Image (cartoon, rainbow, N blue to C red):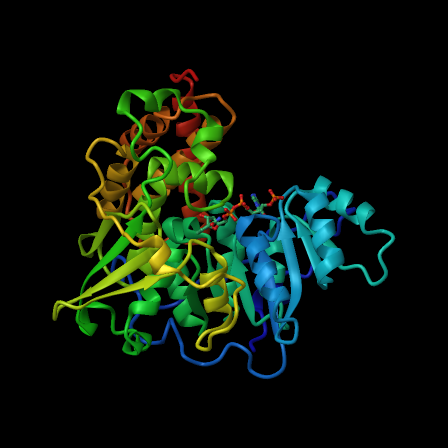
Length: 453
Ligand code: NDP
Protein backbone atom coordinates (compact mmCIF):
# COMPACT_ATOMS: atom_id res chain seq x y z
CA UNK A 1 0.00 0.00 0.00
CA UNK A 2 1.36 3.43 -0.94
CA UNK A 3 1.36 6.67 0.97
CA UNK A 4 -0.82 9.22 -0.73
CA UNK A 5 0.97 12.30 -1.96
CA UNK A 6 -2.38 14.03 -2.15
CA UNK A 7 -3.32 13.20 1.42
CA UNK A 8 0.02 14.55 2.63
CA UNK A 9 -0.15 17.75 0.61
CA UNK A 10 -3.76 18.56 1.46
CA UNK A 11 -4.12 18.75 5.21
CA UNK A 12 -6.84 21.44 5.27
CA UNK A 13 -9.95 19.46 4.71
CA UNK A 14 -13.30 21.05 5.38
CA UNK A 15 -15.34 19.60 8.18
CA UNK A 16 -19.09 19.67 7.96
CA UNK A 17 -19.29 22.98 9.82
CA UNK A 18 -16.64 24.91 7.84
CA UNK A 19 -18.75 25.97 4.87
CA UNK A 20 -16.77 23.68 2.56
CA UNK A 21 -13.89 26.12 1.93
CA UNK A 22 -10.43 24.64 1.51
CA UNK A 23 -7.23 25.74 -0.14
CA UNK A 24 -6.70 24.64 -3.71
CA UNK A 25 -5.31 21.16 -4.03
CA UNK A 26 -1.90 20.76 -5.62
CA UNK A 27 -1.95 18.17 -8.37
CA UNK A 28 1.48 16.74 -9.09
CA UNK A 29 2.27 16.67 -12.79
CA UNK A 30 2.73 13.15 -14.20
CA UNK A 31 6.07 12.71 -15.90
CA UNK A 32 6.90 11.07 -19.18
CA UNK A 33 3.38 11.12 -20.58
CA UNK A 34 2.85 9.09 -23.74
CA UNK A 35 0.90 11.15 -26.25
CA UNK A 36 -0.30 8.33 -28.48
CA UNK A 37 -4.05 8.62 -28.72
CA UNK A 38 -5.88 5.89 -26.77
CA UNK A 39 -2.66 3.99 -26.20
CA UNK A 40 -0.63 5.11 -23.24
CA UNK A 41 0.22 1.72 -21.81
CA UNK A 42 3.62 0.36 -22.54
CA UNK A 43 5.51 -0.33 -19.41
CA UNK A 44 3.37 -1.51 -16.53
CA UNK A 45 0.41 -3.76 -16.19
CA UNK A 46 -2.96 -2.06 -16.00
CA UNK A 47 -4.87 -5.18 -15.22
CA UNK A 48 -2.38 -6.64 -12.83
CA UNK A 49 -2.87 -10.21 -11.63
CA UNK A 50 -2.01 -9.75 -7.98
CA UNK A 51 -4.82 -10.39 -5.50
CA UNK A 52 -6.41 -7.18 -4.22
CA UNK A 53 -6.07 -7.79 -0.52
CA UNK A 54 -2.41 -7.91 0.45
CA UNK A 55 -3.26 -9.33 3.85
CA UNK A 56 -6.30 -9.11 6.08
CA UNK A 57 -9.27 -7.06 4.94
CA UNK A 58 -9.48 -4.90 1.85
CA UNK A 59 -10.19 -1.25 2.70
CA UNK A 60 -12.64 0.39 0.30
CA UNK A 61 -13.55 3.96 -0.54
CA UNK A 62 -16.86 4.09 -2.36
CA UNK A 63 -17.28 7.28 -4.38
CA UNK A 64 -20.97 7.82 -5.16
CA UNK A 65 -22.29 5.40 -2.53
CA UNK A 66 -25.90 6.64 -2.63
CA UNK A 67 -26.26 5.99 -6.36
CA UNK A 68 -27.25 2.89 -8.26
CA UNK A 69 -23.71 1.46 -8.54
CA UNK A 70 -22.96 2.53 -4.97
CA UNK A 71 -25.95 0.67 -3.55
CA UNK A 72 -25.13 -2.44 -5.58
CA UNK A 73 -21.53 -2.30 -4.37
CA UNK A 74 -22.63 -2.11 -0.74
CA UNK A 75 -24.92 -5.08 -1.33
CA UNK A 76 -21.99 -7.17 -2.61
CA UNK A 77 -19.63 -5.96 0.11
CA UNK A 78 -22.16 -6.80 2.83
CA UNK A 79 -22.16 -10.42 1.64
CA UNK A 80 -18.43 -10.63 2.37
CA UNK A 81 -18.02 -8.80 5.66
CA UNK A 82 -14.99 -10.94 6.55
CA UNK A 83 -13.16 -9.73 3.46
CA UNK A 84 -13.98 -6.02 2.97
CA UNK A 85 -14.01 -2.98 5.20
CA UNK A 86 -15.63 0.30 4.15
CA UNK A 87 -13.22 3.14 4.92
CA UNK A 88 -15.15 5.98 3.28
CA UNK A 89 -18.51 6.64 1.66
CA UNK A 90 -19.23 9.71 -0.46
CA UNK A 91 -22.27 11.39 -2.01
CA UNK A 92 -23.37 14.78 -3.22
CA UNK A 93 -26.61 15.93 -1.52
CA UNK A 94 -28.45 12.84 -0.31
CA UNK A 95 -27.79 13.24 3.42
CA UNK A 96 -30.68 10.97 4.39
CA UNK A 97 -29.42 8.09 2.24
CA UNK A 98 -25.87 8.64 3.43
CA UNK A 99 -26.92 8.64 7.09
CA UNK A 100 -28.63 5.27 6.65
CA UNK A 101 -25.53 3.87 4.92
CA UNK A 102 -23.27 5.15 7.70
CA UNK A 103 -25.36 3.42 10.36
CA UNK A 104 -25.30 0.18 8.41
CA UNK A 105 -21.68 0.11 7.15
CA UNK A 106 -19.87 2.22 9.79
CA UNK A 107 -17.23 3.93 7.60
CA UNK A 108 -14.38 5.96 9.07
CA UNK A 109 -15.26 8.92 6.80
CA UNK A 110 -18.45 10.19 5.18
CA UNK A 111 -18.03 12.91 2.56
CA UNK A 112 -20.75 15.09 1.07
CA UNK A 113 -19.64 17.16 -1.93
CA UNK A 114 -22.28 19.70 -0.98
CA UNK A 115 -21.37 21.54 2.26
CA UNK A 116 -25.00 22.12 3.28
CA UNK A 117 -25.70 18.41 2.92
CA UNK A 118 -22.59 17.68 4.99
CA UNK A 119 -23.93 19.81 7.83
CA UNK A 120 -27.24 18.01 7.62
CA UNK A 121 -25.44 14.66 7.68
CA UNK A 122 -23.54 15.73 10.78
CA UNK A 123 -26.86 16.53 12.50
CA UNK A 124 -28.40 13.23 11.42
CA UNK A 125 -25.47 11.26 12.85
CA UNK A 126 -25.12 13.26 16.07
CA UNK A 127 -26.62 10.46 18.20
CA UNK A 128 -24.43 7.74 16.69
CA UNK A 129 -21.71 6.23 18.85
CA UNK A 130 -18.35 6.25 16.98
CA UNK A 131 -19.86 8.20 14.11
CA UNK A 132 -17.74 8.70 10.97
CA UNK A 133 -15.78 11.86 10.43
CA UNK A 134 -17.98 14.00 8.18
CA UNK A 135 -16.15 16.02 5.52
CA UNK A 136 -17.38 18.38 2.80
CA UNK A 137 -16.32 19.50 -0.65
CA UNK A 138 -14.58 18.15 -3.71
CA UNK A 139 -11.09 18.10 -2.19
CA UNK A 140 -12.41 15.85 0.55
CA UNK A 141 -13.53 13.38 -2.14
CA UNK A 142 -9.97 13.23 -3.43
CA UNK A 143 -8.63 12.95 0.11
CA UNK A 144 -10.63 9.81 0.94
CA UNK A 145 -9.79 8.29 -2.46
CA UNK A 146 -6.09 8.46 -1.56
CA UNK A 147 -6.08 7.45 2.13
CA UNK A 148 -3.27 5.03 2.99
CA UNK A 149 -5.64 2.50 4.60
CA UNK A 150 -7.62 2.26 1.33
CA UNK A 151 -6.70 -0.55 -1.08
CA UNK A 152 -9.56 -0.26 -3.49
CA UNK A 153 -11.61 2.70 -4.77
CA UNK A 154 -14.96 2.26 -6.48
CA UNK A 155 -15.34 5.30 -8.78
CA UNK A 156 -19.12 5.58 -9.13
CA UNK A 157 -19.80 9.33 -9.14
CA UNK A 158 -21.84 10.29 -12.19
CA UNK A 159 -20.38 12.68 -14.75
CA UNK A 160 -17.16 14.66 -15.01
CA UNK A 161 -17.57 15.53 -11.31
CA UNK A 162 -15.95 12.16 -10.64
CA UNK A 163 -12.71 13.02 -12.41
CA UNK A 164 -10.67 14.56 -9.58
CA UNK A 165 -11.21 11.84 -6.95
CA UNK A 166 -10.77 9.13 -9.60
CA UNK A 167 -7.48 10.71 -10.62
CA UNK A 168 -6.46 11.00 -6.97
CA UNK A 169 -7.04 7.26 -6.53
CA UNK A 170 -4.91 6.49 -9.59
CA UNK A 171 -2.15 8.80 -8.39
CA UNK A 172 -2.20 7.08 -5.00
CA UNK A 173 -1.68 3.69 -6.68
CA UNK A 174 -5.05 2.19 -5.74
CA UNK A 175 -6.97 -0.64 -7.30
CA UNK A 176 -9.48 1.45 -9.21
CA UNK A 177 -12.89 -0.05 -9.94
CA UNK A 178 -14.02 2.29 -12.70
CA UNK A 179 -17.72 2.86 -13.30
CA UNK A 180 -17.34 6.61 -13.90
CA UNK A 181 -16.76 6.41 -17.66
CA UNK A 182 -16.99 10.21 -18.01
CA UNK A 183 -13.63 10.52 -16.20
CA UNK A 184 -11.96 8.56 -19.00
CA UNK A 185 -13.82 10.46 -21.70
CA UNK A 186 -12.65 13.80 -20.30
CA UNK A 187 -9.12 12.86 -19.24
CA UNK A 188 -8.26 9.48 -20.78
CA UNK A 189 -4.59 10.14 -21.42
CA UNK A 190 -3.94 11.75 -18.04
CA UNK A 191 -5.83 9.10 -16.10
CA UNK A 192 -4.26 6.13 -17.87
CA UNK A 193 -0.80 7.59 -17.49
CA UNK A 194 -1.44 8.20 -13.78
CA UNK A 195 -2.37 4.52 -13.46
CA UNK A 196 0.81 3.42 -15.18
CA UNK A 197 3.11 5.84 -13.40
CA UNK A 198 1.83 5.01 -9.94
CA UNK A 199 1.36 1.25 -10.16
CA UNK A 200 -2.41 1.55 -9.83
CA UNK A 201 -4.78 -0.89 -11.53
CA UNK A 202 -8.07 -0.31 -13.33
CA UNK A 203 -10.76 -2.96 -13.26
CA UNK A 204 -13.69 -1.98 -15.49
CA UNK A 205 -17.14 -1.96 -13.90
CA UNK A 206 -19.20 -0.98 -16.92
CA UNK A 207 -20.72 -4.36 -17.78
CA UNK A 208 -19.52 -4.18 -21.40
CA UNK A 209 -15.92 -3.38 -20.54
CA UNK A 210 -15.91 -5.84 -17.69
CA UNK A 211 -17.11 -8.45 -20.18
CA UNK A 212 -14.36 -7.53 -22.67
CA UNK A 213 -11.81 -7.72 -19.88
CA UNK A 214 -13.06 -11.19 -18.95
CA UNK A 215 -12.72 -12.29 -22.61
CA UNK A 216 -9.17 -11.00 -23.08
CA UNK A 217 -6.24 -13.36 -22.69
CA UNK A 218 -4.13 -13.20 -19.55
CA UNK A 219 -1.32 -11.83 -21.69
CA UNK A 220 -3.23 -8.57 -21.84
CA UNK A 221 -1.95 -7.75 -18.39
CA UNK A 222 1.56 -7.17 -19.69
CA UNK A 223 0.30 -4.10 -21.50
CA UNK A 224 1.12 -5.14 -25.04
CA UNK A 225 -2.25 -3.90 -26.29
CA UNK A 226 -5.02 -5.98 -27.77
CA UNK A 227 -3.84 -6.04 -31.40
CA UNK A 228 -0.65 -7.84 -30.37
CA UNK A 229 -2.80 -10.44 -28.63
CA UNK A 230 -4.56 -11.45 -31.83
CA UNK A 231 -7.68 -9.38 -31.20
CA UNK A 232 -9.38 -8.24 -34.37
CA UNK A 233 -12.30 -6.36 -32.91
CA UNK A 234 -14.23 -5.51 -29.76
CA UNK A 235 -17.99 -5.91 -30.06
CA UNK A 236 -19.85 -3.78 -27.53
CA UNK A 237 -23.44 -4.86 -27.08
CA UNK A 238 -26.25 -2.35 -26.57
CA UNK A 239 -29.83 -3.05 -25.58
CA UNK A 240 -31.04 -0.18 -27.77
CA UNK A 241 -32.81 1.34 -24.75
CA UNK A 242 -36.51 1.95 -24.26
CA UNK A 243 -37.01 3.58 -27.68
CA UNK A 244 -35.39 0.95 -29.86
CA UNK A 245 -38.68 0.33 -31.70
CA UNK A 246 -40.49 3.63 -31.11
CA UNK A 247 -41.46 5.31 -34.41
CA UNK A 248 -38.94 8.10 -35.10
CA UNK A 249 -41.67 10.77 -35.20
CA UNK A 250 -42.70 9.84 -31.64
CA UNK A 251 -39.26 10.46 -30.13
CA UNK A 252 -39.62 14.24 -29.81
CA UNK A 253 -42.45 13.80 -27.30
CA UNK A 254 -40.98 11.24 -24.92
CA UNK A 255 -40.88 12.21 -21.24
CA UNK A 256 -38.06 11.89 -18.69
CA UNK A 257 -40.02 9.10 -16.99
CA UNK A 258 -40.24 7.14 -20.23
CA UNK A 259 -36.57 7.74 -21.00
CA UNK A 260 -35.54 6.52 -17.54
CA UNK A 261 -37.60 3.31 -17.80
CA UNK A 262 -34.86 1.09 -19.20
CA UNK A 263 -36.19 -2.31 -20.31
CA UNK A 264 -33.34 -4.37 -18.76
CA UNK A 265 -31.24 -2.32 -16.33
CA UNK A 266 -32.12 -0.37 -13.20
CA UNK A 267 -29.71 2.60 -13.26
CA UNK A 268 -29.29 6.25 -12.27
CA UNK A 269 -31.25 8.86 -14.24
CA UNK A 270 -28.37 10.32 -16.25
CA UNK A 271 -27.07 7.01 -17.58
CA UNK A 272 -30.66 5.90 -18.24
CA UNK A 273 -31.20 8.89 -20.54
CA UNK A 274 -27.78 8.26 -22.10
CA UNK A 275 -28.90 4.69 -22.80
CA UNK A 276 -32.09 5.95 -24.43
CA UNK A 277 -30.16 8.30 -26.76
CA UNK A 278 -27.31 5.76 -27.09
CA UNK A 279 -24.87 8.47 -26.04
CA UNK A 280 -24.00 5.94 -23.36
CA UNK A 281 -22.69 3.59 -26.05
CA UNK A 282 -20.75 6.47 -27.56
CA UNK A 283 -19.12 7.25 -24.22
CA UNK A 284 -18.41 3.53 -23.83
CA UNK A 285 -16.74 3.49 -27.22
CA UNK A 286 -14.28 6.14 -26.04
CA UNK A 287 -13.91 4.35 -22.70
CA UNK A 288 -13.06 1.10 -24.53
CA UNK A 289 -10.40 2.82 -26.64
CA UNK A 290 -8.62 4.04 -23.52
CA UNK A 291 -9.02 0.91 -21.43
CA UNK A 292 -7.91 -1.49 -24.13
CA UNK A 293 -5.41 0.72 -25.96
CA UNK A 294 -7.18 0.60 -29.30
CA UNK A 295 -8.91 2.96 -31.73
CA UNK A 296 -12.57 3.51 -32.67
CA UNK A 297 -12.19 1.53 -35.92
CA UNK A 298 -11.69 -1.66 -33.91
CA UNK A 299 -14.84 -1.20 -31.81
CA UNK A 300 -18.26 -2.17 -33.19
CA UNK A 301 -21.67 -1.64 -31.62
CA UNK A 302 -24.13 -4.52 -31.77
CA UNK A 303 -27.74 -4.04 -30.68
CA UNK A 304 -28.70 -7.01 -28.53
CA UNK A 305 -32.10 -6.38 -26.92
CA UNK A 306 -31.93 -9.07 -24.22
CA UNK A 307 -28.74 -7.70 -22.53
CA UNK A 308 -27.56 -11.24 -21.80
CA UNK A 309 -24.30 -11.08 -23.75
CA UNK A 310 -22.50 -8.15 -22.19
CA UNK A 311 -19.86 -7.86 -24.92
CA UNK A 312 -17.58 -9.93 -27.13
CA UNK A 313 -14.00 -10.11 -28.34
CA UNK A 314 -13.35 -11.25 -31.89
CA UNK A 315 -9.96 -12.85 -32.53
CA UNK A 316 -7.95 -13.08 -35.72
CA UNK A 317 -8.43 -16.86 -35.95
CA UNK A 318 -12.22 -16.51 -36.20
CA UNK A 319 -12.95 -17.21 -32.52
CA UNK A 320 -15.40 -14.90 -30.77
CA UNK A 321 -15.45 -14.97 -26.96
CA UNK A 322 -18.42 -13.58 -25.07
CA UNK A 323 -19.36 -13.02 -21.44
CA UNK A 324 -22.97 -13.75 -20.52
CA UNK A 325 -24.99 -13.13 -17.39
CA UNK A 326 -28.22 -11.72 -16.05
CA UNK A 327 -28.35 -7.92 -16.37
CA UNK A 328 -27.36 -7.09 -12.79
CA UNK A 329 -24.40 -4.82 -12.02
CA UNK A 330 -23.52 -6.88 -8.95
CA UNK A 331 -21.82 -9.39 -11.29
CA UNK A 332 -19.14 -7.01 -12.68
CA UNK A 333 -18.83 -5.39 -9.24
CA UNK A 334 -18.18 -8.74 -7.54
CA UNK A 335 -15.85 -9.74 -10.36
CA UNK A 336 -13.73 -6.62 -9.91
CA UNK A 337 -13.78 -6.73 -6.10
CA UNK A 338 -12.64 -10.35 -5.98
CA UNK A 339 -10.42 -10.45 -9.06
CA UNK A 340 -8.55 -12.60 -9.91
CA UNK A 341 -10.67 -14.83 -7.70
CA UNK A 342 -14.44 -15.25 -7.99
CA UNK A 343 -16.99 -14.73 -5.24
CA UNK A 344 -20.74 -14.76 -4.75
CA UNK A 345 -22.49 -11.63 -6.04
CA UNK A 346 -26.08 -12.44 -5.09
CA UNK A 347 -27.03 -12.64 -8.79
CA UNK A 348 -29.08 -15.64 -9.95
CA UNK A 349 -27.49 -18.09 -12.37
CA UNK A 350 -28.31 -17.47 -16.02
CA UNK A 351 -31.09 -19.75 -17.29
CA UNK A 352 -30.48 -20.06 -21.04
CA UNK A 353 -33.37 -22.49 -21.44
CA UNK A 354 -35.72 -19.83 -20.11
CA UNK A 355 -34.18 -17.17 -22.39
CA UNK A 356 -34.16 -19.52 -25.42
CA UNK A 357 -33.29 -16.88 -27.99
CA UNK A 358 -30.68 -14.14 -28.39
CA UNK A 359 -31.19 -11.40 -31.02
CA UNK A 360 -28.70 -9.05 -32.69
CA UNK A 361 -29.18 -6.03 -34.96
CA UNK A 362 -27.05 -3.20 -36.29
CA UNK A 363 -27.77 0.22 -34.77
CA UNK A 364 -30.43 1.71 -37.05
CA UNK A 365 -28.97 4.72 -38.96
CA UNK A 366 -30.65 8.02 -38.04
CA UNK A 367 -32.29 6.69 -34.88
CA UNK A 368 -29.38 7.48 -32.56
CA UNK A 369 -27.69 10.74 -33.65
CA UNK A 370 -25.83 10.90 -30.32
CA UNK A 371 -23.99 7.72 -31.25
CA UNK A 372 -22.88 9.28 -34.55
CA UNK A 373 -21.70 12.39 -32.70
CA UNK A 374 -19.73 10.24 -30.28
CA UNK A 375 -18.06 8.29 -33.10
CA UNK A 376 -17.06 11.60 -34.68
CA UNK A 377 -15.69 12.99 -31.42
CA UNK A 378 -13.84 9.74 -30.72
CA UNK A 379 -12.21 9.81 -34.15
CA UNK A 380 -11.21 13.47 -33.82
CA UNK A 381 -9.91 13.20 -30.26
CA UNK A 382 -8.35 16.28 -28.62
CA UNK A 383 -10.99 18.38 -26.89
CA UNK A 384 -13.86 16.83 -28.88
CA UNK A 385 -14.69 14.07 -26.34
CA UNK A 386 -14.59 16.70 -23.56
CA UNK A 387 -17.01 18.94 -25.47
CA UNK A 388 -19.24 15.98 -26.32
CA UNK A 389 -19.45 14.89 -22.71
CA UNK A 390 -19.94 18.36 -21.21
CA UNK A 391 -22.65 19.32 -23.70
CA UNK A 392 -24.36 16.02 -23.12
CA UNK A 393 -24.35 16.47 -19.34
CA UNK A 394 -25.90 19.93 -19.74
CA UNK A 395 -28.49 18.71 -22.25
CA UNK A 396 -29.49 15.61 -20.26
CA UNK A 397 -29.90 17.68 -17.11
CA UNK A 398 -32.09 20.15 -19.04
CA UNK A 399 -34.16 17.29 -20.44
CA UNK A 400 -34.62 15.73 -16.99
CA UNK A 401 -35.77 19.15 -15.74
CA UNK A 402 -38.19 19.47 -18.68
CA UNK A 403 -36.42 22.49 -20.17
CA UNK A 404 -35.80 20.77 -23.53
CA UNK A 405 -37.21 17.82 -25.44
CA UNK A 406 -35.59 14.43 -25.90
CA UNK A 407 -34.50 15.05 -29.49
CA UNK A 408 -33.02 18.42 -28.48
CA UNK A 409 -30.24 16.49 -26.71
CA UNK A 410 -28.34 15.60 -29.91
CA UNK A 411 -29.08 19.08 -31.30
CA UNK A 412 -27.45 20.81 -28.31
CA UNK A 413 -24.48 18.43 -28.35
CA UNK A 414 -24.00 18.75 -32.12
CA UNK A 415 -24.22 22.56 -32.07
CA UNK A 416 -21.76 22.80 -29.20
CA UNK A 417 -19.29 20.56 -31.01
CA UNK A 418 -19.61 22.73 -34.11
CA UNK A 419 -19.15 26.02 -32.27
CA UNK A 420 -16.00 25.12 -30.37
CA UNK A 421 -12.71 24.49 -32.14
CA UNK A 422 -10.95 21.17 -31.67
CA UNK A 423 -7.74 21.59 -29.71
CA UNK A 424 -5.06 18.98 -29.04
CA UNK A 425 -4.77 18.03 -25.38
CA UNK A 426 -1.27 16.55 -25.41
CA UNK A 427 0.58 17.62 -22.30
CA UNK A 428 -2.49 19.23 -20.74
CA UNK A 429 -2.89 19.23 -16.98
CA UNK A 430 -6.17 18.45 -15.32
CA UNK A 431 -7.01 22.12 -14.81
CA UNK A 432 -6.77 22.76 -18.59
CA UNK A 433 -9.04 19.80 -19.27
CA UNK A 434 -11.52 21.07 -16.71
CA UNK A 435 -11.42 24.55 -18.25
CA UNK A 436 -12.32 23.02 -21.64
CA UNK A 437 -15.15 21.22 -19.87
CA UNK A 438 -16.41 24.46 -18.28
CA UNK A 439 -16.21 26.33 -21.57
CA UNK A 440 -18.23 23.63 -23.34
CA UNK A 441 -20.84 23.77 -20.57
CA UNK A 442 -21.20 27.53 -21.01
CA UNK A 443 -21.72 27.17 -24.77
CA UNK A 444 -24.11 24.26 -24.32
CA UNK A 445 -26.15 26.29 -21.80
CA UNK A 446 -26.53 29.04 -24.43
CA UNK A 447 -27.64 26.46 -26.97
CA UNK A 448 -30.43 25.34 -24.66
CA UNK A 449 -32.19 28.65 -25.15
CA UNK A 450 -33.09 27.77 -28.74
CA UNK A 451 -34.96 24.66 -27.56
CA UNK A 452 -38.44 24.44 -26.05
CA UNK A 453 -39.64 21.40 -24.12
P1 NDP B 1 -26.50 7.73 -9.82
O1 NDP B 1 -27.04 8.99 -10.33
O2 NDP B 1 -27.43 6.67 -9.38
O3 NDP B 1 -25.52 8.04 -8.57
C1 NDP B 1 -24.53 9.00 -8.67
C2 NDP B 1 -23.74 9.11 -7.39
O4 NDP B 1 -22.81 10.17 -7.53
C3 NDP B 1 -24.59 9.45 -6.17
O5 NDP B 1 -24.01 8.91 -5.02
C4 NDP B 1 -24.52 10.98 -6.14
O6 NDP B 1 -24.78 11.53 -4.86
C5 NDP B 1 -23.08 11.17 -6.54
N1 NDP B 1 -22.85 12.48 -7.15
C6 NDP B 1 -23.60 13.09 -8.10
N2 NDP B 1 -23.09 14.29 -8.42
C7 NDP B 1 -22.00 14.44 -7.66
C8 NDP B 1 -21.06 15.49 -7.50
N3 NDP B 1 -21.14 16.64 -8.21
N4 NDP B 1 -20.06 15.33 -6.61
C9 NDP B 1 -19.97 14.20 -5.88
N5 NDP B 1 -20.83 13.17 -5.97
C10 NDP B 1 -21.84 13.30 -6.86
O7 NDP B 1 -25.49 7.19 -10.92
P2 NDP B 1 -25.15 5.67 -11.31
O8 NDP B 1 -24.80 4.90 -10.08
O9 NDP B 1 -26.19 5.15 -12.22
O10 NDP B 1 -23.85 5.87 -12.20
C11 NDP B 1 -22.61 6.21 -11.63
C12 NDP B 1 -21.53 6.07 -12.70
O11 NDP B 1 -21.44 4.70 -13.07
C13 NDP B 1 -21.83 6.85 -13.99
O12 NDP B 1 -20.64 7.34 -14.54
C14 NDP B 1 -22.43 5.80 -14.91
O13 NDP B 1 -22.22 6.10 -16.26
C15 NDP B 1 -21.64 4.57 -14.47
N6 NDP B 1 -22.33 3.32 -14.71
C16 NDP B 1 -23.53 3.07 -14.11
C17 NDP B 1 -24.22 1.88 -14.34
C18 NDP B 1 -25.50 1.58 -13.63
O14 NDP B 1 -26.00 0.45 -13.79
N7 NDP B 1 -26.07 2.47 -12.87
C19 NDP B 1 -23.68 0.88 -15.27
C20 NDP B 1 -22.40 1.22 -15.82
C21 NDP B 1 -21.75 2.41 -15.56
P3 NDP B 1 -26.31 11.98 -4.46
O15 NDP B 1 -27.08 10.69 -4.31
O16 NDP B 1 -26.13 12.71 -3.18
O17 NDP B 1 -26.80 12.82 -5.60
